[in-house]
Image 1 (cartoon, rainbow, N blue to C red):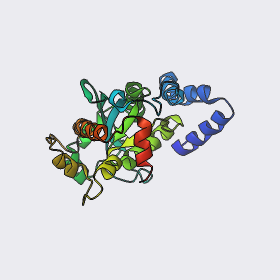
Image 2: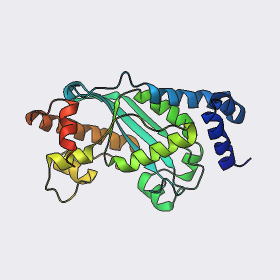
Image 3: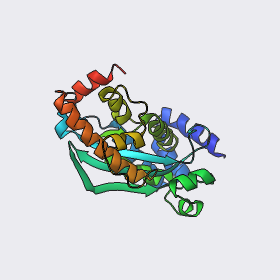
Image 4: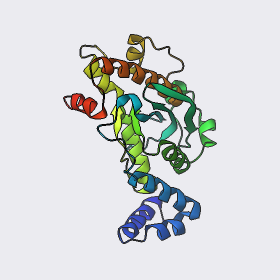
Length: 244
């Protein structure tokens, strides 16, 4: 049975209540456990931060993906996932997450040059479901933050759906949107331009972990600005971002 027919068969069994046995049969017990774990993380809403949560105490995970291209529905795949935890203005640099992902395809030459990830390194990396399980376990119910979240959310949702028939249920904040609210007249809201504006030292760009760490420092700067503007809770922030 080819991969597409296998997925369709599993989806029919899932709707009939036989998802776990079907997965165990088709992919083995380990993959079934991984898929069940990922799905359970998506269902755990009780610990999610509420709108009245103070921003200065907000537990978040700042993350970034590197991919083989920009078409999540056109054959491009996740190459690496990087993330760092933060609570308010405190970045927990001792609690980072980073993993390469085997895309099971060749990496375009320009992407290899941009990211520094070679075909040889990627071929030895963990499979997508292995990395997703570890990443979602790392995130738990924290709010996710990324810069230009459209790309990252699309790839993450596509990966979660393909491997576990689920999608992201976490709140996701976009530092690009926060920047547009705080600085409405900038000519560009790229990460490079914002790092320069806020005088954040640039380490290694287009490395998932390094980009996450720099974005976390940008989030720190935004927290200071928001505090000065009396924006103190998650609900306050969403009220302002709803205009964009």
